[in-house]
Length: 125
Image (cartoon, rainbow, N blue to C red; front, side, top):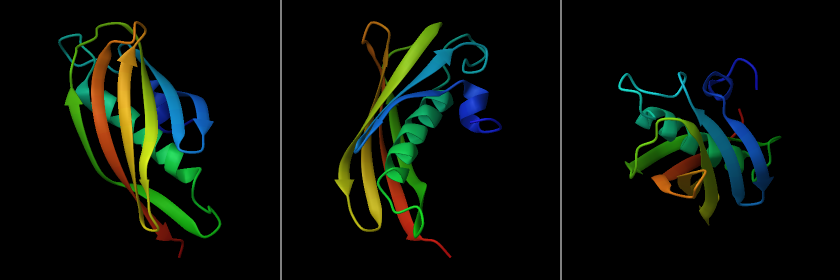
């Protein structure tokens, strides 16, 4: 998606299914902090992207729009290079909110970060 944060961070959507999203992000000069490790903010951006894309695919886009309302993250392990993969699964689907669980792992399936993201669903104006 040209001109978006996804584009700037190199985030690629791999799988989008009802209540499930898988995405990939490089660990490179775009996503590292000054000491050379994956930036926690980049991990959070990846997690919220997965939750937002997943939520968008569950709403009626003609009548509703969705936004990230809250996100938290625990960074478990560091990473210097390669790729990380975010797997998002819906935990709750209500009329005005959704809650998503997102796990970020590396190529060897080591847990890098975990997040929970609440998405607001509001009527379009």
